[in-house]
Image (cartoon, rainbow, N blue to C red):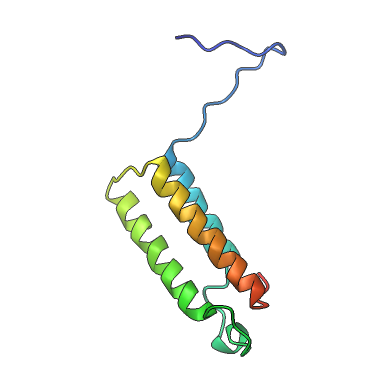
Length: 101
């Protein structure tokens, strides 16, 4: 199978593999969410889910995937999708709790 060039003559780049996308998602999540925020910032008293516990859970999930990727595990699209959904749900709860990131 040969790759054909689009009409403008450029060759479209290959899509990254799932482990690369997983590492990118982990890096973006770590850079965006307030994992190191003090409890006073995370606990405003009006909660729709405990922000601190959700961040601790997500941190554990991210560390687990980092270790698994470092060990050579190759996640599939289902695992990537599951992690993406988890991150999205936790982001929504944090926003509902008034956490800005």
